[in-house]
Length: 461
Image (cartoon, rainbow, N blue to C red; front, side, top):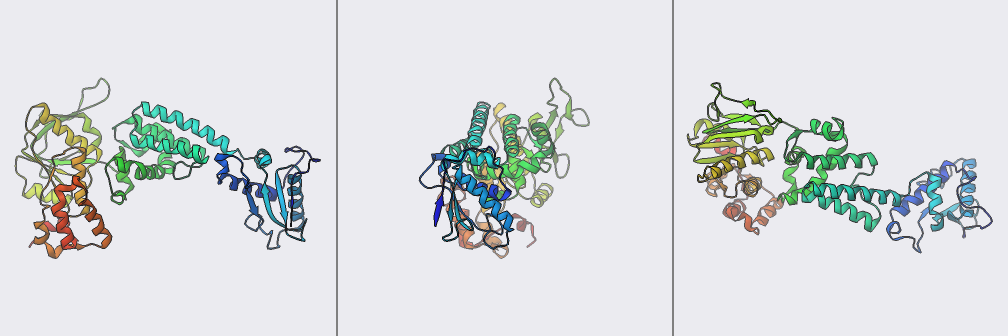
């Protein structure tokens, strides 16, 4: 075998040399190897990027069906590149000029290799990208971006600095997709707690009503799962398997978010447009609306939460209910006149949390003692996390109701059995002090080997 490299008698550079597509494929394969290597970030090393000449590099080269004239052109192009110091060639023994074993990329010919393929050097691209991301990071940090977003930007910059490239799990490969993602993240910061339909958000911040769903949504969901869940205190990403739940956490609606409640509260909503004091909702007599005039209470758009003005809140207890059937049954059959009952439907949405916090502020502003907040949910892992989420985000004193261990024994014939993986998840909560309020229930669940959905409490004995 022999290796053919630079011949100083031949000119270097790309002048007067036009490569065929097969030679360009070989150069591109070599550049791919280089851009995946440590040399991209650390500089040239003793080990040069190389490719074995197989059909995967040039279709038909080793199997023999490559056109003979195309093969001759490929060999001549590669010899010319070797003469110019761009590559070095290793021929199969006794087959020199006829069959190549390997092609090596010469460090001195790196710039020419990029020029011949028409590719922009990845190092140049990454340098420009790092400058863009750094400017974006500084601007969003000054604008109050959440910590998870800044951590993501720092990881992007670290990847470029240490590896010379950034993986697709952090940032899209295409320049336009990168631009749209940065615009979307900046849009989340700019809109703050405002709740927007995804199409409106996309139009406002990306300039196209469908760009977010088509080119950003899946990428953003991945970043939320990887970076934001931990910051939000969500230990189990599988509870956010529905992408709509994750998007709702950052104020993007894929479905309409309503707040449904029933109880002795009086309120009105006022338009938030600049200079406007027109009521969005008033009672028929021009006074405040009440939340207990209809059998199932009333619903309001989560987007109007910040415009709510509470006239009176006369409840002695607040009860949040996870399931819709239980909410409907309770407000019709069991609700006391001094109770405010709220339908959650799962983890409290950002709008629901702001609504509950506004109730809390009303009591504090009027120097009245806070009513107890009880939560009625499933007696399972998810139900425990939903209540803890309420405690973490809006009502630290929240307590369980009808979620005591005795309910498992009372309805043991309706338990849903769980597997070992689920058992381990439950058991891990016993190691966390923040779940101390639920430890008795968790031990009962582990002993029973099954969970109880709250709908089963509605079934007649």
